[in-house]
Image (cartoon, rainbow, N blue to C red):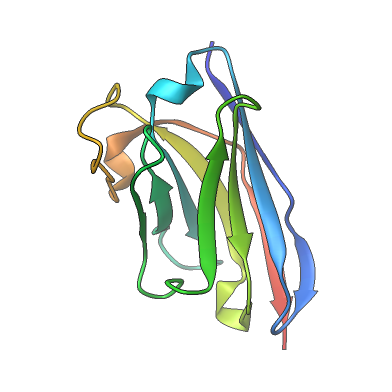
Length: 129
């Protein structure tokens, strides 16, 4: 059974940094892409970043481009989201998710939630002003 566990959230001041982790179990993790999404109170879930199974390609939402970095360690079965220069508008519950597609093109970087099959439980990030 596939399981994703997100962790690393917390309270941080504006301009600070956090690193989120998404630990996977129950499958051949390295064959799938992994993405991060977030949902703020009263708002819809939105795409944040995704990394391809091959690690060659990553894609970011405009709102986090240049501040967030997604990476993966297949040996550790973990995907990371390094978040720098955090802003109050980054406050949300962050979810990691695994793509439905097995491998795919090395530039396959989906951004719609429907392209992801398994989801972690979420970790809360709060950025104070």
